[in-house]
Length: 71
Image (cartoon, rainbow, N blue to C red; front, side, top):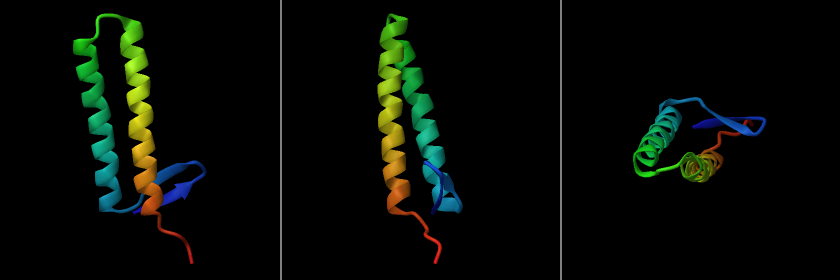
């Protein structure tokens, strides 16, 4: 579902694009919710960076486990 390009994972079929779109949509939704619930910029940024690290880590794990290797 993914192809590795350096440290990044590029989706190459529909399943990969669905996983990528779900990760981006969840990151945007999470940022929106954090913006509505936090009262200071530092709280927002700290929580956003931590959430993005978790989302990127899960995306990378899924991509690594479904990596299509060249023969």
